[in-house]
Length: 201
Ligand code: ATP
Image (cartoon, rainbow, N blue to C red; front, top):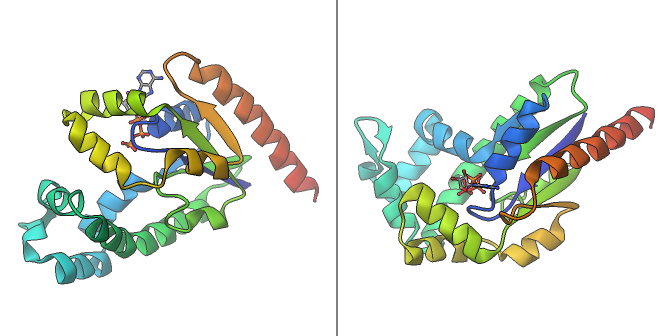
């Protein structure tokens, strides 16, 4: 079973592409969703977050996401600190999830910060989802009701898109012009062939 990463910047369409793979029967681990879950359920993560960001981050035991977002999206250092507190737990959780997956040619781990967290090193191949900057800004403004400036700020905190895409083994273009489905079907075919080769080795 191959372990495939799926990454891309905010609003590139990672989750949208991942859902298409799911319709083909491919199990997908969503790292961002897992990080949100672990921030509420993993005591080691919770204790570390409280230690660095204060008790105010949890309201009645539940993460106050808006409060935390207000802190980390205004400071590169604080965002990096938060990521450093959550990434080890997400990587361990993803590893456990991967071990439970059976009888499939490959699985996908979808994560915005696959390279930044070091998680890519444990994967066989990484697919990048690419969309131009202006398309990403518009999508996130529409989806999250954020201002153009806020989206630009969030984008600027991530690894440069062009650099990220160059590090990927494969690219799916999601620019509102090229269709995703044929690209995913083609990718699926390639990955199944690579998985067969792995079995023969
Ligand atoms: P984030 O990192 O912020 O979670 P993402 O890369 O996972 O973003 P999505 O959530 O998949 O991106 O897409 C962002 C928004 O753009 C969503 O509202 C999604 O429905 C929309 N979108 C993505 N791709 C397309 C497309 N090809 N056609 C129409 N809408 C799209």
